[in-house]
Length: 395
Image (cartoon, rainbow, N blue to C red; front, side, top):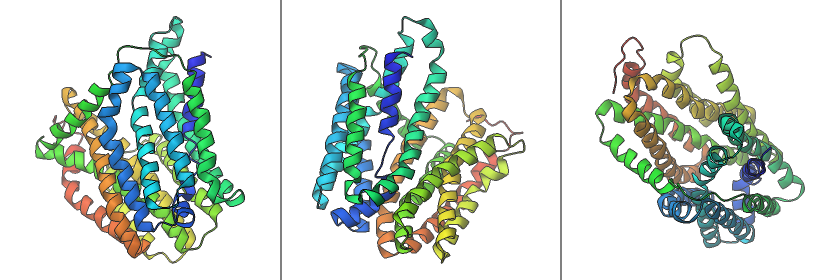
């Protein structure tokens, strides 16, 4: 295998090893001493920083080099993780989250672009033909890393100590940064700034599109964003049940596996998916309601897995149905705008979820259930129009 491709795979896998993810709330509470509300405020701050830094950091990849952008990204991650390991108050965490946001923004787009260049500009023409297959592997190794760390992170926390979880992640990130450092640099053709500017412009264009387009964009952005709150809710719920640290990793891994299983079964389902897509919000609303009322750990865990599994995959099938209704000249703009609106929705929901969880995780789940039912009643008419496949109405 080509050296640059192999190092790219290795770095992508290592960056996916978020050992802290299954116990992050426990770390913030028990090691740093922050409240649940402070935790959620900090996550909203992190999302805002990533959003705000997208365009400025893109200039490094465009004007200097993508490799430099990736090396700086790795260094920012190492600094942020080490500060988080040493943190003992909220201001240390703010500094750490800022460095970690810089890591995400510097990495965004640059890694994928460099990976493409290794194939497109390779002297071995057979390598260019394998780009699609290698890109699939490139994305999948990251998911493998996430799945492995959700399972093993809780084991590390249980047996080595939760206070070391960010320190272990720091050394993993050091290894990833070394892999990136030894990558070959390919200069020229940087488009990260233009890509990011285009995404921001897409949000403007979607918000000023006609009502049906706007409503569908908000639908695609809000439903997975509300479902994503299940990822933030599972740790407060497990804490209220006084669950074992090991169970934190099992539930988080179950969310990932649930997404994979739903994708597999729905992709192999031969019937009509319109009913499933149109009624997903009702299903998710009911699951949030059961979660709010459940008195037992196993039922709450199952609801959380299904909420994330269904909610985070549902957009894939609605997207597929919408493709034939969108004019090709507007299609890319529409989905780019939806992606950015989704990030903004997560940021706002995470902020308000912090206040709700501070009162009670069950109350927070009930709020999410109400929001999901509202989303259903607001958007169901527009979904019905667009999913009527006998009426190819182009937007």
